[in-house]
Image 1 (spheres, rainbow, N blue to C red):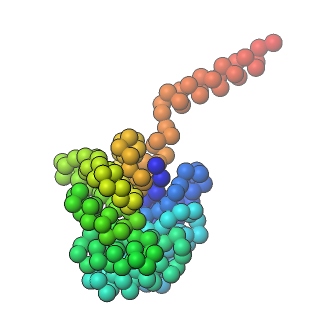
Image 2: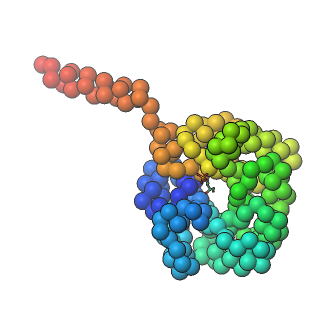
Image 3: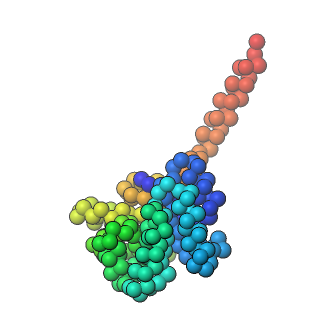
Length: 220
Ligand code: E4P
């Protein structure tokens, strides 16, 4: 399973990249705003900065919501770097645009997906990635992981190559459960990625080993 980081924070992206387990980055307009990035030139510069750090796909979201706006923006974004994946919302014009980008060989990430029917439509349009938001479904007491299972089943039934990019991940257990289900990718905050590595028994076991080593070294 690929690990993407869901942030526009350059320090977090660098830390995950240095860890050696990062496969890509997803951003969205809220994450860009959180970093204080606004204005077309600054946004473009920020995508370029992200692409310079990470080895892998970088999702850059369009703001337009009608077909022509999505196409124009997507073409501009795709020109920035081969790593750029045009992130398109799951709306009618978005699906039409994904079909267009797919014919042009431009990678896409269909975002804001909350149902199996939406995921099926994204695959039929030829999306490279589909992003079901499992955490936001959990937030409204719905089964987010259940949706990932449904999409996996449907894609496997027909051999769709669209990759399931489980998004809106809140914690490490979401990542582990997505791996059990067979999601292709998870995108999560740095905290979830680093939490995967931690276990209190590892910490106490290591402390014990080091203390025993020091005691033994002090003996004649
Ligand atoms: C997906 O690509 C989105 O950026 C993201 O995962 C949304 O997550 P949130 O629910 O934490 O905002």
